[in-house]
Image (cartoon, rainbow, N blue to C red):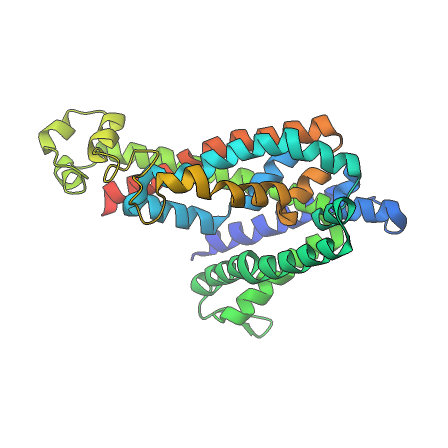
Amino acid sequence: MGVADILVFVAFVVVVIAIGLWKSRGGETHSEHGAQDYFLAGRGLTWWLVGFSLIAANISTEQFVGMSGQAADWLGMAIASYEWMAAITLVVVAFLFLPKFLKSGIYTIPEFLEYRYNTFARTVMAISTLVILVGVPTASVIYSGAKVITVNFQGQSIFGLDLGSIKVGCWIIGTLSAVYVFTGGLKACAWADLIQGSALIAGGAVIAYLAMKTLGSADPAALAATATVPVRPEDLAGAGVFERLRMLNAGDWSVGKLHMVKPATDPAVPWTALVVGLWIPNFFYWGLNQYITQRTLGSKSLSEGQRGVVFAAFLKLLVPFVVVIPGILAFNLFS
């Protein structure tokens, strides 16, 4: 990692934290209104902040790597089923779940269970959700961020700390995140999400464009070796970039990489799972998951929140094109 890369990385982190803290300044720090400012951004999030914050809270570099890798392996566009289904789920959440949540005036989803049922239901969900969030997504994201630091800063140190140590990397990632979360609350998170979410989507779009451009000029003979069904190099030579993509990844739904669904025998994403199995976790994740839903609870109004959630659904439709397509192209170009 060169000096320029390090400077860009550090500058980006500093700018994200600084903007988050700057935009969250001026709120009350005590009383009920202070709690509302901290946990719900004073219930003042606009629709575009809600939308970008939902997507940024959902996608991450680990998802980029994971989904692209699955697309390159054998799933192809079928791995995007999670994104299409999420878009449908978000629309339902916007018009069925969100009105009830905002009408009740809750701060958390476990609080809604107490409002609807009893204290025991609230306690059970609060504990189970906390264990899941800390043990799975938070731990994996901190670890993957630490790996980036240890790999790129191997052999270097700062303030006597070895940047090649995974423990030091975890502490750095955790501390940087805690700075703007503890200081600025949800509003700081929302603004940081806006920047990071935009950067991820824009970066994915640039990669997709460059990959398509490279595919159009790649050697037909080398490309033919990666085709899912036999294709002649001379046919590829006379084809445009989109036709090349289609020819290289053609085939029935069991082998072709451009199919949206896989047969029932597929070990990862059978079509039966899409029809029956994934809706329950989908509605939990987007409608009852505190980590996600808190963004919608901080919306300025019901209409603003609904527009934000529908905007997030629209962004979800774009994710496959900036995450999955580059994975398929990577297989065609580098397999």
